[in-house]
Image 1 (cartoon, rainbow, N blue to C red):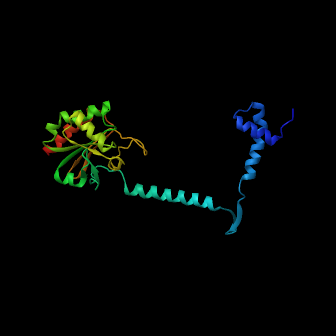
Image 2 (cartoon, rainbow, N blue to C red):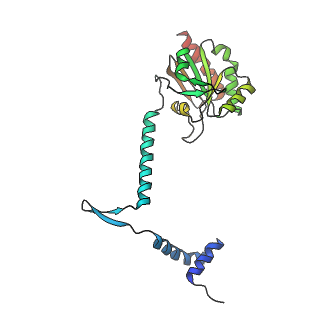
Image 3 (tube, rainbow, N blue to C red):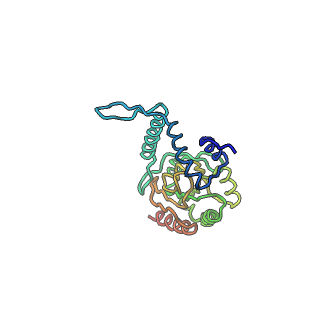
Amino acid sequence: MVELRRSGRISTLKKTHFLTEEDSEEVKPAIKKQRVSKTKKIVIKKSNGKMKPKLDGKEEIVKSVKELDSTAVKNTDSIYKELQIGDDIPDIILPDEEGVSVSLKKVVEENKIVVFFAFPKANTPGCTRQACGFRDNYKELKEHAAVYGISADPVTAQKKFKTKQNLPYSLLSDSKRDFIGLLGAKKTPQSGVIRSYFIFVDGKLKVKRVKISPELSVEEARKEVSAFASN
C-alpha cells in the first residue's frame, strides 16, 4: 500500500471527522503550522518611540464597530434610566388591544391614580390568575384609579386574552419593552417580563413592586389604591 504524505493524511482525517488518539497528537502540530502560515503578517510601526501593531482594513472596521456599540450602550443607559419613586411617567405611546395608541402622559393627566400591572405572557396560568384578579376587583379599583395590564405580547395576543377572560380594562402591548424596561421589569436585557405592578399618583411613580405573585399583586394594589384615595 502506498503511504500517504503527511498533508494527505491530514486532509483525509479532517474529512472523516474522526481521529484516533494517536493520530490527533500527530496531526495537531501540522494543523497549527498551517494555520500560522495563513495568518496575515502584522506590520509594526513606531509611534511616540514605541512599537505598535498596525491594524489591517478588516481589523480597523471591527474595532470601529465595537467602539460604536460601546458608545450606543452608554447613550442608551443615560436616556433610558430606570424609574425611581417620585419620578414622572415617561412620554411614551403604546398600542392597546385594539391597536389604538395610548399616551401614558395623557392617561395620568386624566386619572389621578393609575395602576399598571406587568405580566410575562398572555393566556398562561399565572398571568391569567393575575389578570382575572384585577378583573374581579375592578369595580372597587375603578372608583379611584385607572387600571392597565402590560406585557411584551403583540396586539393580537392581547386582544384574544382580553376577550377570552372578559377583562374590563385595557391591555397595552409593549413589544420592545420600552416602558417595561424603564419600570425595571425586564427579565433579561434580551427578553422576558417580570410579574410586577406600579402605581402612579398625579403622574409620579409612588409604588414599585417587582417580582411578586399574581394574587399578592392584586391584593396589595387594591389596598394601596384605597390608601392613596383616602389621602
